[in-house]
Length: 267
Image (cartoon, rainbow, N blue to C red; front, side):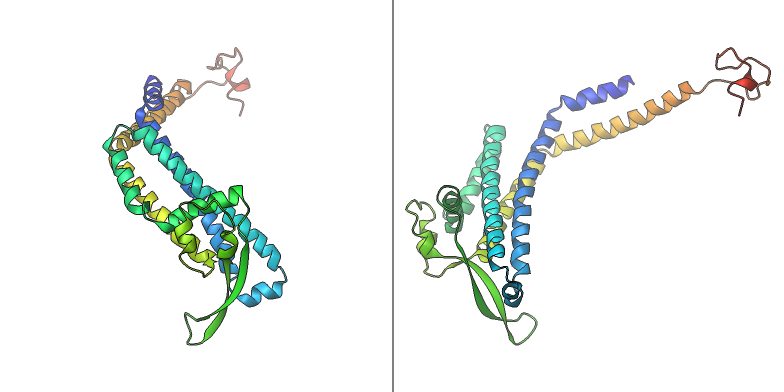
């Protein structure tokens, strides 16, 4: 049992376990962001056919749900971006990894109009009003046929968005066109940008801590083996060292004071 306690102590005070916890923290934040994206995409996919949406008579209910899911997507995006930034600064502030991270952010997002717009849109939704969504019917060529099909498109009206006076970084994206913003295209583009950065960070952290994670895996394997041996020894010690055949009228080896036939040999 002392080996089990030793391995347990090594694990719980190890830096490797703390590093694994960091991976878990980043993972759960990305999971929330990704799940919100998938829920939003699911609704958009389910209402792609205009007949389904209009005949259901639930256009307003669909719009409300769309706005709710879009707000969740924006909020989780901010959480993921802000938390990842703090994680990198707090945990890797004195390492070259932070410099690589900041360089990657600069390369990917410094001149990224879409990213800047998403950041302002979060503030718009949090401090001004929820984005007003409209729906339109668009005719597009079918993917599997030569004909045309009607699709419902949900959009953010640029004219309505421009009423807010506090657009900052996202102003260039907002004013680059007079066409309304198709929500599905907006969230798809932004999601894939964030996904790509998350994959880059995960790969760099895995490479940075490969030795620590391997050490953790090895210690857990040793702990599992030590537990198996301890359990086997405990079972062996618990088994009485009785003779192969015990006379029925002999005192029971268990120490009860009764005859064997009236105690453990009753069965």
